[in-house]
Image (cartoon, rainbow over all chains, first blue to last red):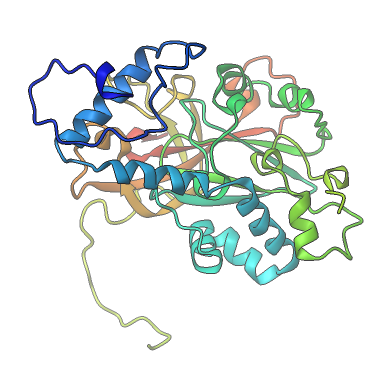
Length: 229
Length: 110
């Protein structure tokens, strides 16, 4: 946003910088639709917080960097380690947050606890947040759009097998489905089953098989995910 | 550090110990407060079993939403309910379950 389009109808010192800001619409870009209600609200609240010196613009930039540094690749490393190191796996299942923080340096900046849910031949875990979009962001980054959308949230608690089937995942009838609804301060990471035929794989090769969706529990890890070198 | 606990008599303050233990049957309250809440409507009034007691205690995030969180912590529990009990007409196998975390203030003993 440039100064000439910056309209203030509240009274305050005008001493903040109007440098480039990735959150602002570029007024020169005519193809960009005008901001919606919530975007305007977000800009207004953010500018007020900055002008009242409750937060600094650098803090928002820093938090975006924090989020950008969190991707499913982190979770994949944790899963691969658990597959090759039974003692680490035991620590991870006992306290997911502590194991991630101490042994990978993956900090839980949002002060949530992490419960790692192990998928086995008898139990298949899947994670949802029916109320909103609770998600283990420290280890997986931002959730996919479908995870936040109402159809997934409403349906997976009611007909999980049908939803999993739409992801291409058929769970045998003798396996127990556990739908884990994340509503509060707990976050869940699924520890998927290690596929057969990976006995000779290195930890790094194993990690390359582990995708975001396998750690939400909507698909199983498959050798078809293997990246060709 | 010794391996055996010294025998002392200590009275724990209210809320220091979890009110429920793994295996306890509980009912999730059927309350409809106005404002921010973290118990989905579909689970209110439902009965289940405590599967996991979350340690350590944590702030009640419903109170936290209103900025009232200083010093007030309590236990969260993971409560499990068979999907066949939750949804009449559930067509999947009987062992399929839903597990959800619920703050202590929402749980009633059955």
